[in-house]
Amino acid sequence: MLQESRSRQPERASAIPFAIWEKGGTTEHLGGIYATERLLAMCHLGPGQTVLVLGCGTGYTACHLAQHVQAHVVAVDISPRSVAEARKRVAGAGLGERVVVIQGDAHRLAAPDCAYDTLIAESVLAFCNADTVATEAWRVLRPGSVLGINELTLLKPPPAELLALLRGTLGLWPFQEQEWRAILTDAGFVDVVTDVRPVSLREQFVSHIRVDGVRKYLSAVVGGVSDAGIRRAFFTRDMLRAARQFRPYVGYGLYAGQKAR
Image 1: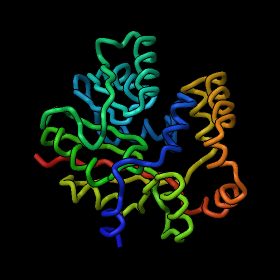
Image 2: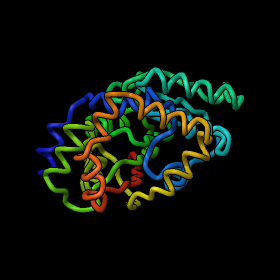
Image 3: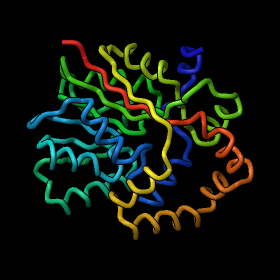
């Protein structure tokens, strides 16, 4: 079942999630900055490392790594809006010498083999062909390096209706914990450790305020509600019912695996 579902993963997700990011320009991944801090701790980062942040969004994690870990960071995102927002954040923080932001595709990274000490991806693989991205991550990491990801994780076997909603409407391909672990090990990563948790709405909200500020967050909410395509996808009776019915099935997982030396 796992191999069959993974073989059908697309290399391009639904336009709906990307429309949200393009419209709002805010940092968005489950668990927020609290999950980011736990994920970075799992990766055992150190000063002077070269880190690739894949799907960098508005650049919060990239700037955090440069400021608090003294890492050299290459931040990549496929969204032009996210790249612009990340560059703005980097410039505002005075981190231009430590953080480079570029536009790129997670399935085909413009990097040589064994180029990075660590790769961080938050809410990326569930929107992609996870096997392809995990294999690319293994390729660009040096032996002994670590891949750390934060991904939407199914807390128990999902009903078919939930999978159809996530995949068909939202273009999301989440898996259960053991399936995410298999994706990493099949790509060649070893010693995979995990931390799976339910979603906390309070955690999400507080994280948004800390990272983006009240004004920018409210502006993003208003922008999303005013977009007809986003309204048709999310603010429907079926979607609101599904949010209540399926909430116990949906969480997020932090996963870290090492490329063998």
